[in-house]
Length: 120
Image (tube, rainbow, N blue to C red; front, side, top):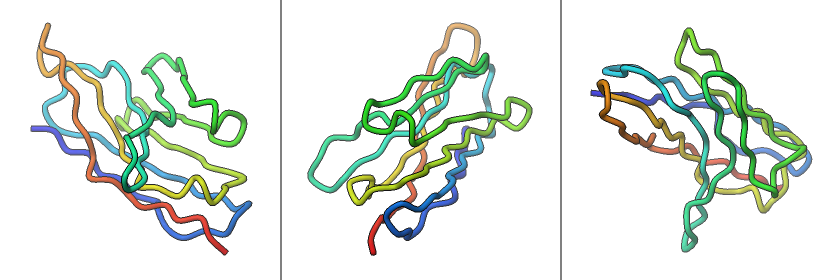
């Protein structure tokens, strides 16, 4: 069984910053990538950023230059530093783990989400 513990969401004013973290634990053979996605009510879940254990990063165009994803492989933890936040960044942010449960058995696992609200 796998667990993802997300933290760091909250209310912030436009232009402000927040840092999200997501720690993975449990039956993980190896990690392919970890990342953050977000979803507004009534909209599809969308990619924010992903990172592989060797540091390859992928960002949505809408957050490029404002958000930074990083990881701590020893702790199976991914971070999302969000800066210059805009009201349109308001959403529930979900952590996603892409991993191998065993050799050749690739799985995805989602966190429960953390709400980020950008408002004055």
